[in-house]
Length: 96
Image (cartoon, rainbow, N blue to C red; front, side):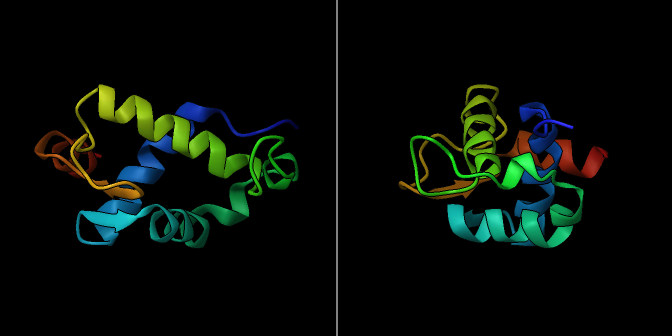
């Protein structure tokens, strides 16, 4: 079955942050994603990451967050471990 594609986390991050009022800690955001989509994650997604003490899907979501900052959907100026939607991010999540 494999792991969930990194790009699949984009809409999940957008929706989780929308639900959190537009901003949340990394942990709050990942917990909201798990609450909403945990049942869709594969067994492989839950395996531990080789470089960090967290499930693989946390690492994939964090890499997607980095791409979303580059694409202007999340605020690059947010404090460490805080994820926040930009206006473009709000527009992207409400367009869905």
